[in-house]
Length: 429
Image (cartoon, rainbow, N blue to C red; front, side, top):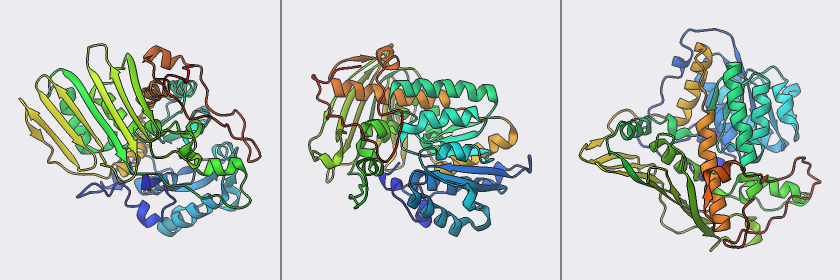
């Protein structure tokens, strides 16, 4: 997912999300309706930035009988901009009156109580476990952006919510968008069917340029400045290995058939992004994951300007290798079973919502909860190993008691001040 999609975009641009892929064909959104259940579904948007606005745009296109009913954000300007742009594109499908515009840290609760059927969770990742738990407890269908947590306690909370979603028979869809990209589905399907043989190694990258930032405005408190620039603070974003590169890590896990790594060793740091402006996150990571069968996962991610970019997953096995290159839209297998994807392209962001609403209409509910939590923890595990310089096992990561960030929030609070991690010095907890 390109970093530009996090910006507060014009809806014309949001509507083209995923346009880095050539020859996009948007699947017929009316197929989600399928003539089943004509009831109008009310959507609630929680988190009105670029990603949330993009997801709302796609949700409104996914089904002919849906409306945007309520919106919530901690920043009124974000919500107002999102509402204006969505209204320009969708007109009468946007039915958010003044009584259904909620601002504040408790806005998510008010959206859930407003009569919505489906909620989009697109706030900074720190808030995801609490918001997801509340949404499932309220019996709502959920589109949940990635990552789903920034720490292990959050992941455990998400796993509990995913189990509850099955019990309540509601749909839970993740924002791991490549899982809904037809070329990726075909490629990883081939890998899982044995096209490259027994997997020995998976190399995956997410090397990009720098992130956006908002300069400080007079009148902002320290908390508001941090919350508006959330990507630079581990307690809010999880660091970029968790917030962004988790896409590549998720595809590694996909290729492994969901098998979990037994341990990870990593390193990383700040070579370029050293100013306090950039909070406490790293600008590069390198992690080696070990699997029980002897396979290794090699992960590299970087956010540095004017460097070689790379966004791919290369799976190497006893019968060949599979290349999935997200940046160049290459999907090919070399070796004993050569293959190259030549089928239809699709807008994966739109497909997510098409399939979400189709599942709601049909009653055959989707639940991405387990894999989205596991992939998030694999990324967190890599961050733990890189921050500490120590080998971290899966059990240690899953059972970690480290909880990032405060339990209560206000614009007058003192945001957590955390030193940049130093491998070999920072302790595991």
